[in-house]
Image (cartoon, rainbow, N blue to C red; front, top):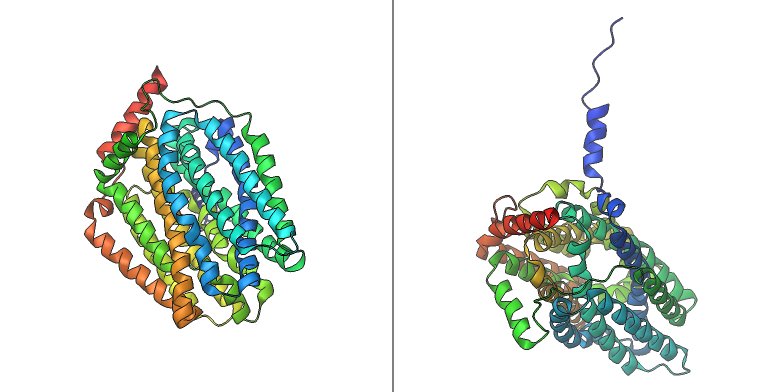
Length: 439
């Protein structure tokens, strides 16, 4: 009997398709500094996301107010804006490794301040606002240096793969840490959560210490208002870049609602599921990352940003209609997957097209786009919930997100039409890095 031909749905072709979905670990295999940065990021995110659950939980316990919880994010907004922009200028003018290490030490101290406050017989509400503002400021000073180190430690042709791995790192911590944080604050109190966060920064410092120095270019512009203005002019002159910022800000302002999760868990009759709600988006993001190998083959990242952001808003609106914990979890997971895909496309565009001498300042502007939106969005969610309830804030916010993203997509043809194969900035940066590699 002759053997039949292999089924199209099995055998090597199927395995090849599966491999095409899996993330490329080349950057981890080839770059020691990328491995150290990734390990540090996992540890730091683990502690930080536990605190992300502990702070709103503690504020809810101390005040019982939707608005008070939402205002935690608002208190972080101004330091984030000022320090994010200044951090970008510093990243282009100073040794990026030094900036990262000093900021990591500062973040360890702010976590210790939360721990001390939690251990007081009468914890103070104002400390949560003040330390939240300090933490946002220090983190925003650090972030541009971290972001601008990535193109320095990874080959140009591996930047898309590195973006997928970075999202995978984030989601690993974002699934485990909030779930653990919810259990910790409910069973052991917020002091334990803050203690773990403090320890995570100490361990992260040890991981970051061996990384190579990343000094500025010899002709680097000193950090100043003039250098900041130069970065802003470059961003404004790139409609595709501005589009990525504006779409993300709109999506987060209208649909981000994590400040409501402690109240939503109570409304669902499952306060023990608080950590589950915080982890849901990361579960979706993890699935998107694990199967995100296909994103490396996408060249129209701008259009991808628009479509993914609209899906994020639609999923958040659907969560408002869900009546069980698992239905809400499913909606939030879809939203998280869409947000992660949008983030991968944005990061790929940024790293492939922005000149190295401007990368820090543009990273500061990027920080404003992906950090200010959630802060303002949580403040909006708290205010809307105070007026119309939790479901109103979730549902209307999600619908407003879809409308805003669709409007921006229509108004920004440069973003929709961006193609890495033909874009002048992407081609110029690829040629510059190829020339550096041969010298």
